[in-house]
Amino acid sequence: MKNIKRHICFCLIFVLSLSFTSQKAVALPILKKVKYSYLLHIPEDYGKDTYKKWPVIFYLHGRHASGKNLESLERYGLPYYLSKGKKMDFIVVSPQCPWNKNWSSEDWFNPVYDEVAARLKVDDSRVYLIGMSMGGFGTWELAARMPDRFAAISPMCGGANVKWADRLSKIPAWVFHGTADRQIPVSRSEIMVKALEKLKAEVKFSRLTNQGHDISKQFNNDELYSWLLKHSLEKLPFWQETLPFLKTIAVKQVSVSPPLRSHAGLALVQ
Image 1 (spheres, helix red, strand yellow):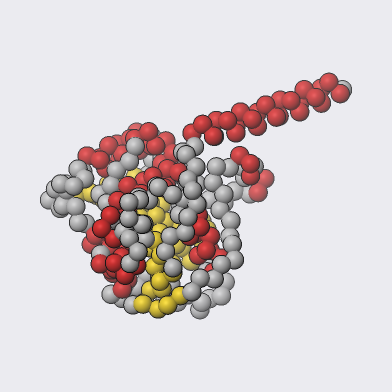
Image 2: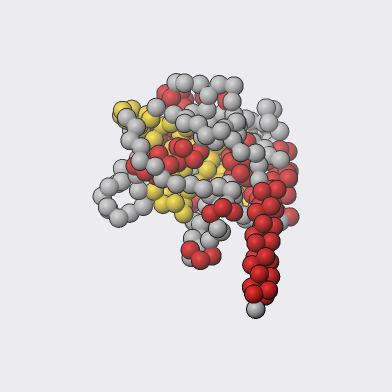
């Protein structure tokens, strides 16, 4: 009987070690955690229902908005429309990437998400990721790093490594790209869409005929936000969850209360 028990324990440990090894093998390199400044949009009706949790959009800007001036994010894209009074039933987080970095240089997402989740009523099953140009590339890669984190994504005029298709196939995606884009060829999006379609992933592709690189008006497309809201993550019962030491991504809430100052309907968080 003792030998049987030992054999069962040995098999269990062996299976767990194999799971850990295989998961570790496909994981992308671990990045240094950092804190990026960000603009924060809170819905007009936030707080009216004390029990309501709100969906969250993370918006990733392009190269020209990088730096230390948060107000530069409002020159185009989603922060521009929000600053002009666009109404949205989402919490919108618009981080700013420093110069000489891109959205995959460091782990900025977890510290920012933890801070927002600690202060606001966020719906953890409805976190979305959208971005254009450098932000489009960042949307693809961040989703590939954390395929179980986002309910849906929308990369615009970006591109990605086709080897990530298997991870990305878990996430519904709506891809936008102008056919006349001279900075990032539409083929960069076409390759990813075809790879996802082969895997039977849920993917939409809007080829914007005769449009160039600047397709930021798509962030004023209410159809996009209605589509995002159709998707949410399934929360497994605790007994079906992956064991903590086998998870490659862990998000936890921390108690942080950064200063806020109002600006054009948005909050600037340093």
